[in-house]
Amino acid sequence: MKILQQVYTIAASVALICSATAVSAQGNVDQVQNQISGGMTDDWKPSLKRDGVYDRVEHVNAPLEWQYVREADVLWKKRVWREIDAREKQNMAFRFPGDENSGGGFFIEILLDALKKGKIQAFSNLDDRFTSTLSKEQILEITAGKMDTIRVIDPVTEEETIRYERRDFDPEAVSKFRIKEDWVIDRNVGQMVVRIVALAPLIDVKDDNGNFRGSQAMFWLYYPEIRPLLAQYEVFNPQNDVYRMNWDEFFEGRFFSSKIIKVSNPFDLTFQNMGASAMESLYESQRSMEQLFNKEHDLWVY
Image 1 (cartoon, helix red, strand yellow):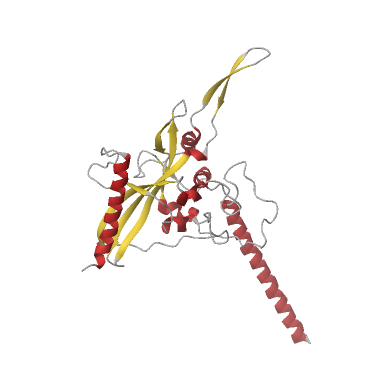
Image 2: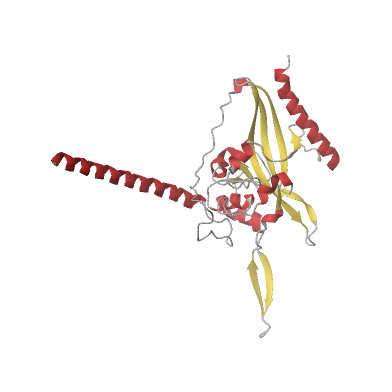
């Protein structure tokens, strides 16, 4: 009888310890989720009810480590800059307004929210070599612009007062993204290795009359450092709402549509800065892409 009571006591203790461990683990998961979830914008609010027919397990993902590339194994390298037009059909995920599982905002709003909370670091838009960092105040000035001076006249007293306001940031104005990447032939694995080095959102610049003047980089992000952040947010899948990859898998799998705008050259100029027209730049982009593919194809042609 005493042995049976001791068995019951030990079983109860083990169950209590397992329960406490599960609660602690769930608490850690909830803490992580609280840090990475929530709406990217003030007007987005999470659902107060379970919005679905099944209980969804919270996804806490981590990016896969890159294969290490030794300098001695690099036979050939080319640096490439390309642009992603978020208005193209294949790139519609960049402009998805968000839901319960994707953060509740555009892709640019995910980046800005992480910058505002200090999760990632931004660098100057004038240099993609990461030589100058940006503060939160500078990022706020880039996104919302400088303080606007508004003259307000009281309709009763006719007294004039000055009010300072910032314009609301419009995520629709970010229509493109620019990435800098390296194409490397690694003889250790015997294949072409493509690694994204930097990412920059491009904002549409308009004059006082609302006419489009061009696109300008807002800031640069060091891609290897933002991969853990990108792995926490899901990408909209138009084919299946159950299976969604995260943003890190989206970029690593190269599921986006883009065009090459510059290949490393002695003058560090884009195709358009070299005097090419828009159509000629597109042809040059396709020709550069074919050269990259042919370079990898030549590895297996004897």
